[in-house]
Image (tube, rainbow, N blue to C red):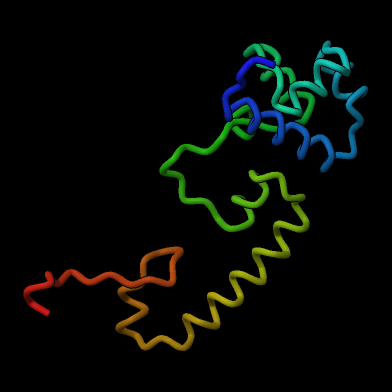
Length: 136
């Protein structure tokens, strides 16, 4: 089997998640994109490269912006549920987990004093300090 880059595995997992979220069969999605069902199965498994025109056709058939099929840029600051959805977790489950995680984080933040909250790194439990080690 040829080596397929992680981006194609990501693309395949994303297509599969979106297809399942919309209760579409592989047969139906393949027909809407002029692909064979077996080719779509290989794409979803990350075992086949995908031509650009097929990425566009898949996005149209799934009613999403083509960008949603691509992996996030390394510097992207994503929410918990978006990270989970991009990892293939079903949307409803990702939202439920994010609600719990965000609730725990909110409870933790309520315990902090104003100074600590002001120094909090966005999206993290950690704080920063502008002081150097010699001035502490």
